[in-house]
Image (cartoon, rainbow, N blue to C red; front, side, top):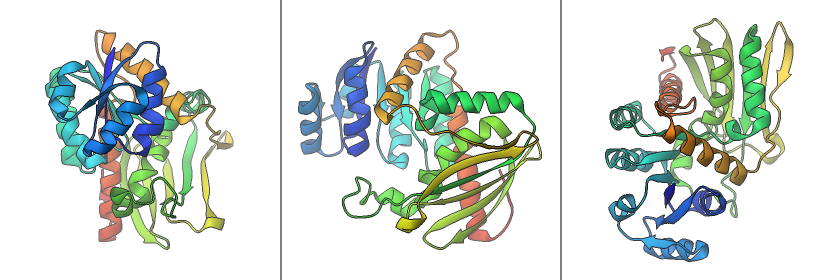
Length: 298
């Protein structure tokens, strides 16, 4: 499948591009970015075409991988779907419910394949855990702590404007939800508060009766950094394992799955835009609950 890459930042250069270049079933056509100099540099690094018009790129490919801030991604992905291009999106797929719903509607209208790259779910150890836990059932709830620290000078995301504005809820929150939702099911309502170090603490009540607690930040003190998701219930306490693929390997697996999904009679995927829109709706409800100090329905 002939792919184009949209975006020239760290994630695009160090995860998307190497996976596209190495994939045996990909013809990596070229790159478009918002900064011409960075576009030229990244294209030269991988020996592909530097596009200075995104519509020209869309006209030359069958699929695009997008590595842009979520609000910019959502609008551009709609444009690509209208052009009939398959989509490999980053999480979260949008920053508002309206934008997520608009993208979802266009993907369905055009019958294109679309997958949201929730990195952990393309690691066999974690995906197998999720499937087994969902099949086992009997869970009373889950607890996920994602205390990251990304704004130190030298971190590749230190100057990410959207991460500083939206925080851990929108950046690492999708990773937690991508593991929890397939096991515990849809969310009925949420409560949330803001905590120290720009943290969001949320309580999610699932329709099945299970309860999830989330603690999320990108500004954790160095000594308090932690990433752990735990399920508990009649089977005891079960900790989600670590990844057994690098981000580049996981993105390669996502490419493989997008190609397979595009070839299927019905281009649907468990981590497609329907799931992506569900995640956005939950994040938006948590954000609103923290601001209003009230329980918010999803």
